[in-house]
View 1 (cartoon, helix red, strand yellow):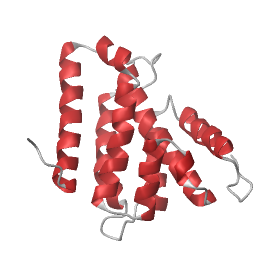
View 2 (cartoon, helix red, strand yellow; view 1 turned 90 degrees about the vertical axis):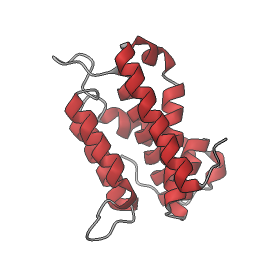
View 3 (cartoon, rainbow, N blue to C red; view 1 turned 90 degrees about the horizontal axis):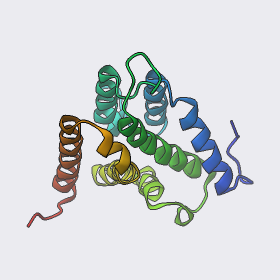
View 4 (cartoon, one colour; view 1 turned 60 degrees about the horizontal axis):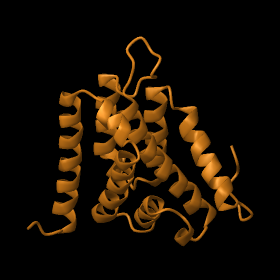
Length: 179
């Protein structure tokens, strides 16, 4: 693990974020702990809601763990390549944003998904959280279309329903008009 400092480059931070996500790839509980640790550092929680903005995300991840969709592909009860990849996208962009934020690097150099998390870290609000969270999820979804098509039709329906609800909740919070 690198120590974030003034001489850290973006490519070093990208490698570190990827290493953190890869290290927990086959361990659903470790994925959950990684995310909880992120919210412990950056979630803006308070005594009655220690995870702050991360509460709903952590609860959803617990559901994913319980369903087994984040399990290793070679496990007795194999997980879902799609759910694992989308979750990995969320983990990566948020981890990278945390590293970039701590290093004090300019965020214009990073991908839009990481920039959205940096915007959240600079201004913790529902609007910024939804944009960051959902842009990571949507990027993961778009990057894993082949895995999505390999799921059962019922699972594809569920995946799409989850995505629709995420985007709808964001629209309600941000005031995006429907028409």
